[in-house]
Image 1: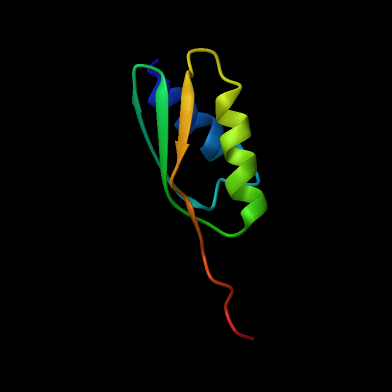
Image 2 (image 1 turned 45 degrees about the vertical axis):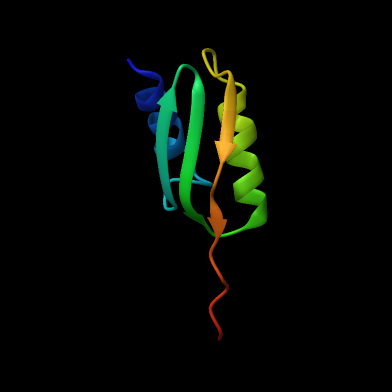
Length: 71
């Protein structure tokens, strides 16, 4: 299983991230995250989760936080 497949599987099965728009690319262990998440917490947490995986040498986190919707 490729590193991208492993990262996507973890993101898509994690309750904090499974409904977020996170795209993954990887080259030589460097994982690039793009897309959008709902909170600053999610942005930081997904980076920490991915950084801890075997084979990951670094994470470039280009995720943006979606603006809150007005009530």
